[in-house]
Image (cartoon, rainbow, N blue to C red):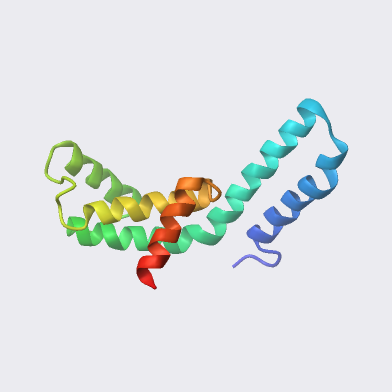
Length: 129
């Protein structure tokens, strides 16, 4: 176990420095690069928070779909092979739900402000209510 501060706290501190201290003082290309860096750190931040649980959930869905065990990477390779050779289609029980949930999780990490993601998330929340 690493001592404090945790990786997510370090990433947050650097991102906040870029956004709140550095970026207001920068112009032009330098300001653009600082925004890109801050955005990259925000993605890393979300990956550190969301990633572990979502990876475990994705692996559990894949084990159920494929009836096999393995690493998340290996299970995804097997899923891709099954889809590619036609053993699995969108008619396969649970596949469409798995693909949808996996896509939503990836968007939550990479593009949480993406309008279509927010609408889909709101729709799911309404269905769960």
